[in-house]
Image 1: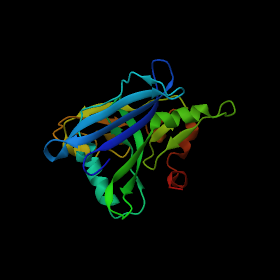
Image 2: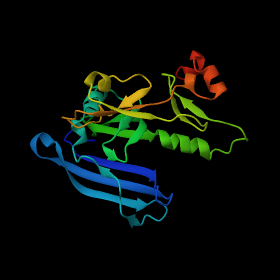
Image 3: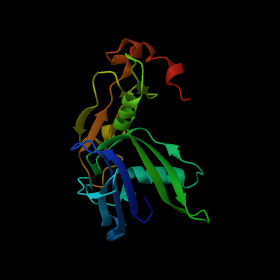
Length: 224
């Protein structure tokens, strides 16, 4: 995402239609008052195995400059004077269709003279983390779980409750959801009045006894 509102977006994802892997690419320049509207130059999708173009179902919705979003403005201030990037708490973003529940990381983008140009943002989908767990060649009966320091489950191979979605028009709740929840507040376009809140299940309540047993263990929950 560039400061002038231009952006390049790429996404790998598994298609629901046939299970194949796709590469989605979108490029655009900001136009209009204050650079808030995005003029698309590319919105394409390719089969990752053959790199043959296919019809895309992924859209940026609505077509707005991501540099106007609250989340960009927030980490822009953190990154401008930072030589390194940072992890951001889990977000639920509906600026793409379908929405994504993800763990973001961002790094500053600078030119050769060190001038701040924008930010590189990487989203690690929680669904992709779970898919990775399921792809591991584990012994029978092994279960995997990723738990954050809020005690919520990011991904697991253990059967149990999933993410709970709700909507709110309360700005206080949308801007500051509970620690195990994420909302669309940070990624909502200016003027949005209704927000989606996505709450992850808590390890302490999960129907898997070994996970509940370590849910309150700070030695497990603290950062490595």
